[in-house]
Image (cartoon, rainbow, N blue to C red; front, side):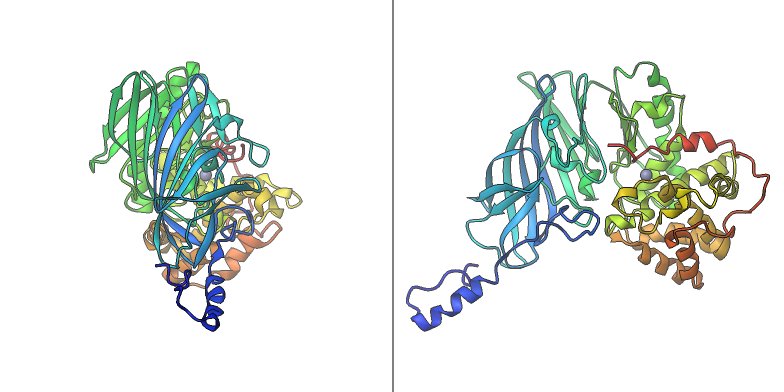
Amino acid sequence: MYRRLIAPGALAASLLLAIPASAADFQPGASGIGDPYYPAYGNGGYDVSHYDLRLKYQPKTDQLEGTATILASSTQDLSRFNLDFGLTASEVRVNGKKAKFARSDVQELEVTPAAGLPKGTPFTVVVKYAGKPSDVKLWGFTSWQRTPDGGVAANEPEAAAWWFPANDHPLDKATYDVSIAVPDGTQAISNGTLQSQSSKLGWTRFNWRSAHPQATYLSTLAVGKFDITTDKTADGLPVINAYSKDLGANEGAAKASVERTTEVAEWLESVYGKYPFEALGGYVPNVPSSFALETQTRPFYSPKQFANGSNVSVVVHELAHQWYGDSVSVRGWKDIWINEGFARYAQWLWSEKEGEGTAQELADYTYAQHPADDAFWTVKPGDPGPENQFDAAVYDRGALAIQALRNKVGEKNFFAILKGWPQQHAYGNASVSDFIGYAEGVSGERLGGLFDTWLFEPSKPGASAARASADVVQPKSWKRIAATNGVHSER
Ligand SMILES: [Zn+2]
């Protein structure tokens, strides 16, 4: 394993000249994975397959202690590599041996193993750490929300660095075991299935497992006092929902919405195909924020989503992401339309099914809301820029693009595309151009012009998706869908 690094002592000096050249092949991995929107996010030189996080959290003090064991494989001859992390590491080991480590830039933890890692080598990193996540400010903000009885990690595009070291970009998905001890009487919620739970000396340990590839920002942790409901779908998948015990007046509406998760997922299967994961659910912690997030298998909902009463539309949105965003993830953050356009369009389809306005009526109304000189039309959903990644145009104009596709290719092809795409790229990553190519393949139509008009032109398209009628009426579902507009727009 070390032959390229260590010179046999008996070698002649002339042969030794070859050694530095060979060792020089071992380079540090890049400090970013190569996303132009966020050059520092993720890292180069390795690929993670599994995170094993063994944690302990004290709600009173917001103190989090952890040991992260990361299974990875080198993708180059690697002399050093970075993890993205905000808490304080006390020890790092690579393949069991102590490694040097140092902080650099905002969130980079540079790890130098005792020996270089030849390309294609599976390796294990152990990071021991501790800290108060709410004290960690990266890029000027924290993704860790404190609640009266605990804390929550849920944010997009960045949340992981507040609670575990990671290759923090959707391009590097992995499976997870999250084991967390909290004081008795407190619960810990994460993704996937609860494998076991046990109590000892005043601490209760929850062992969660997420068994399908999962992006780092879709990994979530919530500690607090929750009412937990459990059930099974008709297919036998576990459904686990959790609600802070102190939701106050929002409690009823939150439960009346999130308890419909199974029903919504069943309907989504008729549109997007078989549900891609091993568990379902949702959780509503008592956080001050107002957004929701499609954390894998178990979306996060702020209580404010339910301040005006129940809102099944936001559940439709976050569950639609399980296919469009979670199973099929963005290749780069510029591809956000393949997440948000389709999550919004699912809300339109739900409205259509409920008889509260068809997708076409919602498209007409959306189109009519924005005059040609509205800045709305200057945002390109197909490449909005990091500053507009979660702009309303990515959602609404993004959904208009999908209605334009429907009108162009017809019902049969359209619904074949909607159902086929999550199969085509299941558990992987894909781009906007991959989607255009896929839709062309299924429909046999040339669609470059249509998508250019709706996703890439910085101006109001002619009314081919929407009827340019002067008397468009507000669909019944409009306000409830509009109420979910802030779903990802807030840190
Ligand atoms: Zn969304």
